[in-house]
Length: 220
Image (cartoon, rainbow, N blue to C red; front, side, top):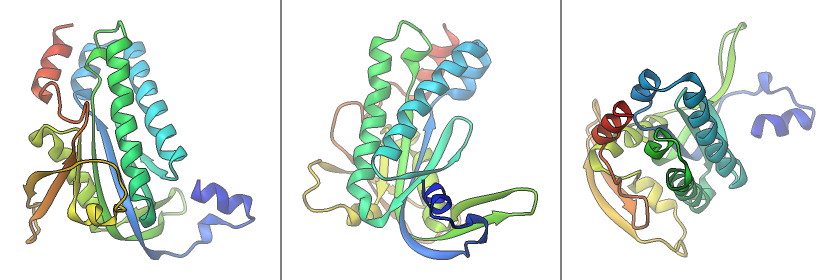
């Protein structure tokens, strides 16, 4: 939407200079997707991806976020630093949306449709990256790396949602959720240990481990 707004305003996004901004970064991923691709038909794989992206992208956009990249079985998105509450609400709605599909669907593959989400907040570098042949308007920086690692770490913590102290500090005081400590993480190559958090609520704690999800997919 940010690039589209610029085009509609008569600007050329390819000429935008890189800049530094405070942002919220979100990564999401489908759990067990590699196993799904090996065992499901193309139609079933496409149906799951369509459902996931239809829910995920709609919730991000309607809450004021921008989806920066589609990652095959996941996506990266970002929000203005003032939109932490909106980013959290969208994350909850995405997780609950997939839970609703698992409950209603007759497809044994869709009944194993789970996602994970990681979020962080802080300074990023925003702008065009690439060459004359291929150019992407994207964001870079430690916050991006942290959000990605938190998303991956959800599998070890068995929560569908993890965020760090930096994100927690951007949440308004009137955010009506119960925040729970979720241990720590020392990312590879970093000296600082991150304090992790999740929230209390339905579908936040995984019903199954990633290993169980993979086994159930193979058993279909």
